[in-house]
Image (cartoon, rainbow, N blue to C red; front, side, top):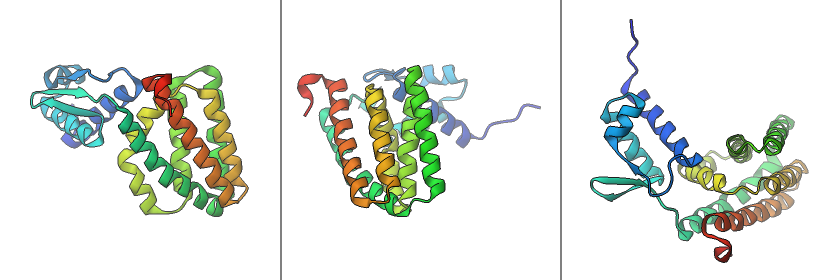
Length: 218
């Protein structure tokens, strides 16, 4: 007997798949999302597709150009600037807390992620690099031990991942993450905050350069 998948589970699956396609670049800025076509592609009704699109609008991945036309959002320099300002405020603070609160088990998990990032960087695996680097940042925020801090970053986590995917200076990212790990492992909050600040600002310049060209880089 065929098991019927709950509507909520279908919606979450479609949302996750579309979000990943946008992050990976399979769906590009300006591409139109048509309910009927997506329903056929995913083998579902139009209802979960419609709900998934609404969720992605709320997350900032897509927007309604007109009431009947939905497209993948085109990132602007202001979008990038505002998100990185948020990263600078929250992730730098998180790094300082992590340096004072991280356990040896926490540090071992971050070291494992860096090892995986190194292997993915050597292989040139863009998807794996994006995934591991995002997990690394999530882990550092978790190590800060502040649930409100985690909740503050959660609504923009997907968009940050989307922008991180645009930055392909992978060897440099690996160097910066190793330095950030060492600063946190030292137990010195000031050192950790300094490295986190440098990392966020360097990543901001790289992302702007890749998205909008050398002349737009701050």
